[in-house]
Image (cartoon, rainbow, N blue to C red):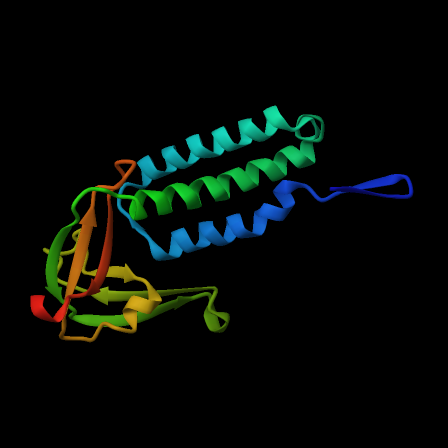
Length: 178
């Protein structure tokens, strides 16, 4: 795991190996999930990150001795803690999701950051009465956006969440429900 080159020691730590997948998981959770209770999700994420970091510090003496390793562990823990807990909150939710049926009033792809498009959001306009947040425009995943059509029915599924963090998802309604 550790290679020695002359007098310098180059570490290829577990944190370095796991950082990219953790960041990818965090980015997927941020872009694919519609979390409604952000303060509660942030609290769970910080608790998860603290637990992960404490485990690394306890099990690996190198992390305790090297502040750079500790900083890497903290960043990994934050990304992985949010990504895994947000995904688990939605995917492992055992509650029965409530469904609101609505009609897609309009659709747009919002691009910010100029021509380079630093962020792209796919959004649909629905009746504010059926929207989980009471707003007309709501975020949808790009793969779902491709299956929605203006004027067609959509189902908004509202879940309680495994961790008690409410979430929602927009999907086309099955044909027999429209």
